[in-house]
Length: 420
Figure 1 (tube, helix red, strand yellow):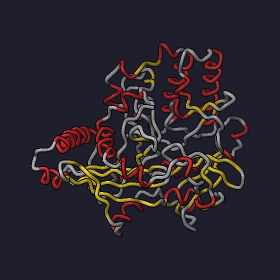
Figure 2: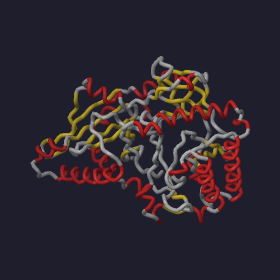
Figure 3: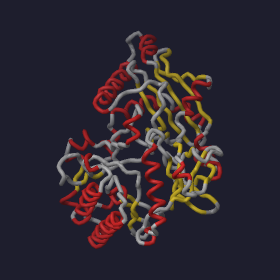
Figure 4: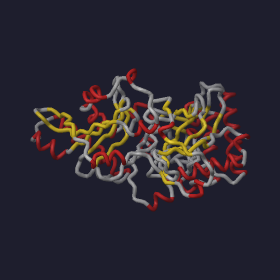
């Protein structure tokens, strides 16, 4: 699922998408401060068209493609099931194959051809007039705080077949529909051992959004200081807890003085509750660019060699203090505006192709992922390849986050293969 659906003057960022066994589907998007939710009742539009409409046939074809893929990848959910709404981040993953497989570089066209994106685009095409009508232009948008961003005005629609066309019919904002939107709100409940770390609590309404061009507000301002806002994933609370604890432990050991690593600056909540957070603030890395984007022979060899050496030193420093990075991959190193390397993301787990599943959150797993990073930096031509060079990456390029809590809960995970 792309972070932005379609190409229009008012880009619509996908917040949530689902489909069920009845071939119904729904899409929730965010466009310039306004939220739009559209539901497709396939049985109803098919009955109204009496089997004579190409638009209905197109939807039927698209939903069958999506269902076919989902049966391979993951279970489906009904509209009443709590929505999964991941970090919308894009991932650039290596193939899951041999231990020595290289790194798969990005390919935007592949992502755009995804079957779910095609269905999302179909639904969105029937909402364009409504988005143009209700969403303000970029110049008309007012500076928003994080609370307002997550509690916007929302328009609800049912797509229906009328007079030979698929048209949106606006629905009343019933309590049931509002409840569905509330389920999209990020929230994780923290245990006492994290609350006792004395991290400042900050209201989401106190955070001014500085950057709004992406699908999620990430660059925010508080008391004239810039921070990176990491929004939690309520379907995966374990990585959030792990990351906060490890980052605070790194700070306690003063390791942030020996390597470049973000610090936790605050816990962010929608309410006055200290236990429930929607995200947490980290050090802002100015000009941050994923190291994956720099695995290229056009980047000077001296820079790449320096990053390779530094990446190994950072991981060894963690291990020296009995800390496991977890999810070791090039996307979890950032290069700032001064070409300095930062290590990020201590949520743990692993990404297929970088680390073998049995080495999840182990020193050996860290070493495996780091070795692939170092090899790709020293010789990108020999150790990276384009997505077109393999079908394995297309089939296996899913970032699979596994946690002990996921094994105990039946949660629908709608994670897609994304290649930026």
